[in-house]
Image 1: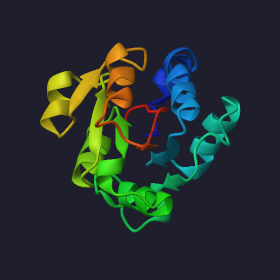
Image 2: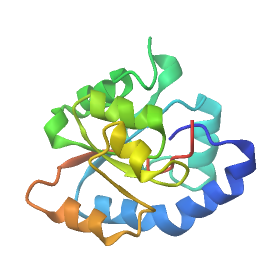
Image 3: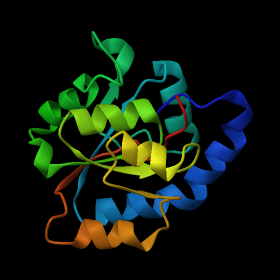
Image 4: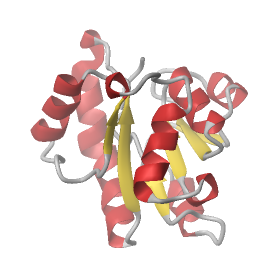
Amino acid sequence: MSQCPRNRSKTFLGLVCREGLDCLDHLKQHHYATALVTNAPRLNAEFVLDTLDLSDAFQPVIIAADLPRGKPDPLPYQTALAKLSLRPDEALVFEDSPTGVQAGAGAGIATIGITSSHSDATLVGLGARFTVADFTDGRLLTYLDSSDGSNAVVNPCLSGSA
């Protein structure tokens, strides 16, 4: 989850409530591990997770401020992989920010861009495998259920821009 500009906070929370939770439910039903990697301050991340009743949905929660380097450095995603005991080829990142796409791709993890605030061209140019407008895009479930889908998701499903 990246820090969301104040003027987008209502849209941000609405996006998560309508479109992100079905994606998260699918992941849980199929026994995917989920982690949250964010550059947002801890209090902001905890507030959003508590507000959406998702405090237990992501383990681990990686806060960039707790690390020597945040996104766009790959360290936050590498830290999540280590905590989940996964290799990069066993994970998948959802990101909507350029720094997040760079971090996920830089960690060697397949990264899907969410075009909530940046264009397909921008996110693909920074390393996203492909992009979707939101979590209702049928390609996401197809990708997750495909033979090269991952068994874990390092997932900032609650993303905003940073």
